[in-house]
Length: 201
Image (cartoon, rainbow, N blue to C red):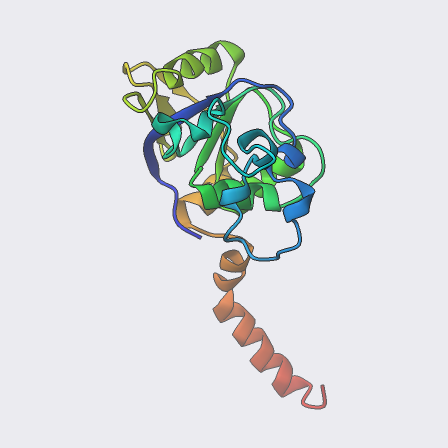
């Protein structure tokens, strides 16, 4: 997993509330167990017509937001079923951070495990960032995870809270496998000792 330290990127405004995981990645695309390749189907039903052509009004289809790496979203983002494909699809598209007033718990935790930073802010601060995002590609939002700050394009800054353990994992690029591998030396020592004490196992 890539380290997340600082991010300066285009933010796409998605003020719709209750965006659930089926909207993020419809169930038709859950057959794969690969984390890559799902970005093209992100927000599939909102993003494409039935004939496969793009809906020009959808925010991520607009030229100024095609390279967005941040979403400023409405309340209760990621609700619905607990599919991990949702953060996989967001990450594969290029989304590295999501800002909202609240997230569904399972989705929130899955984001951290897949290198995405979900940030919870009060409604008035989300409103400021939403308005900033509506300026398009010329307005870049900066996120500093180490100092836990978000800076809008006009320089206005907000602080955010993040769990220390989750912060540590993102800063060091540690997913569940990476966390296990941090203990590789201790695991090897235990296995060697156990093998010597119980050679019949």
